[in-house]
Length: 228
Ligand code: APR
Image 1 (cartoon, rainbow, N blue to C red):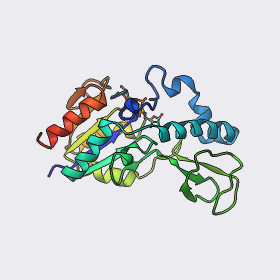
Image 2 (image 1 turned 45 degrees about the vertical axis):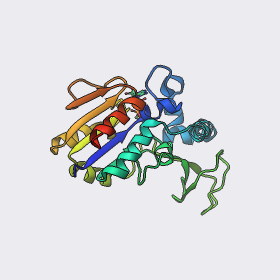
Image 3 (image 1 turned 180 degrees about the vertical axis):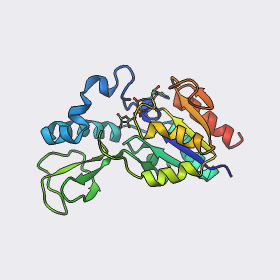
Image 4 (image 1 turned 90 degrees about the vertical axis):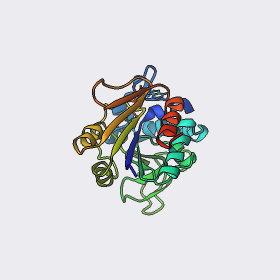
């Protein structure tokens, strides 16, 4: 059975109504990421950062998984040998039925204590005066990996890339490392590479490219892998 590593980005949740970052009107065209997505920004103004993520948490909770999330959950269930890595902080893969999703940039529905490192399910609205349930410090933050911080589960991802036959990047611009380097890493270790994107990211970077909206292109590709 072919081992497949899938990396998803904001494009897989775009048709669920969650914004992307770098498309027209994307989040980073409306917010200064250094203010809301860096440890320095959080230290400077925790209330602003909590407001930003409270809005994204509400959007994520109000959104529903789409046909791309469902198709990937079906692939995991029926094909086996699939490792699903996501850069997304929403839980739409899980709500579509995916298991063991590797959230390398953290999760909007989880909270982290900046003092003692405790993690718990985030309340719908978080604020700078919330006390950590473990140590009591008013230092709670969303359990999100910010720019300048090290992504989660990198050893596990490296192992999966080393052992895979096919690497598939879905709905990601391939601009943010280390995720952007996975395609070269997998190809260098002998894997075939496929990009599924509304606007393919870079000609020649992948062995194969399927252009189209994720809700159409992903179910079609999954049907091809599962043999119809
Ligand atoms: N179907 C498929 N792909 C789509 C769709 C769609 N409906 N809509 C947009 N896309 C593609 C775009 O063409 C683009 O390549 O999704 C990608 C979105 O790119 P980004 O906005 O850069 O999002 P992403 O690649 O996930 O960003 C990576 O950057 O800001 C950080 O931590 C943040 O996880 C994020 C990381």
